Image (cartoon, rainbow, N blue to C red; front, side):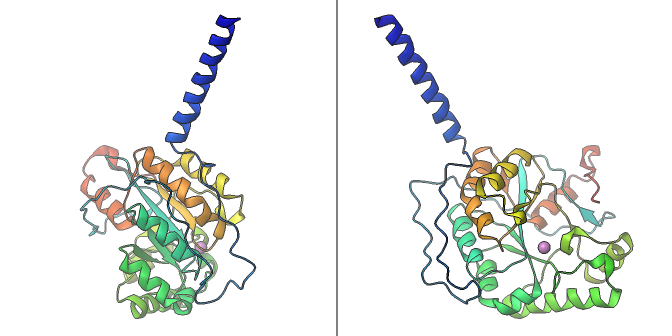
Length: 289
Ligand code: NI
């Protein structure tokens, strides 16, 4: 009886150890989603009722890094990932700024010393310039994601030119900085369009290599586990700060990536690394399509 009990206890303790190990590596279910921020209107300029929950205990921090962001324009116009020599990744948030979800996300990023890249829609910049000012003030990078979020491949050159210029001007008006790169809405852009847009605006075209399909709202745990399982060194991760579920997924996602040893940089910093290693044969990054 005693030995049976002992071995039973041993199994229990071993099982507990595995659970603890899994928890220490960061798991997607470990962070509870906050309750929905009531049924109040979404499009308001502030949300006094919302408070970012206090952190319980330390969170992992992205290391302090001083990295170049002055990428050189090379022959390649589009990137869905970048070949790097260490576990650097760029996380990107599209379609904002959003008056509630973007500030919540900024709190989460700041707590972890993470700089992200925001592909903003110009009409939202004009609606919430103060949110974008905070994005820039906290050291994040801005990219151009058009003014009205229509599919470029079905638009005239004149319309595309206007979409990009209006958004660039809205960003400059709100923050005093220029967008560095372009992400076309839905990733859709013809090769001919990539060429003239790059020549005129000097934007590299940034797609992505990790897509959690968070805009389909599969739930925060699914968003998190898709990102954690697909991210590798040099990944460009796509997410949307427009959606509450995506932001709900971020504490566990960011902690999980940090605990796996990834270091967050902006898209420009990632591109600058690609330029540095361009002489190495391994630097041929995956072609975007
Ligand atoms: Ni978009």
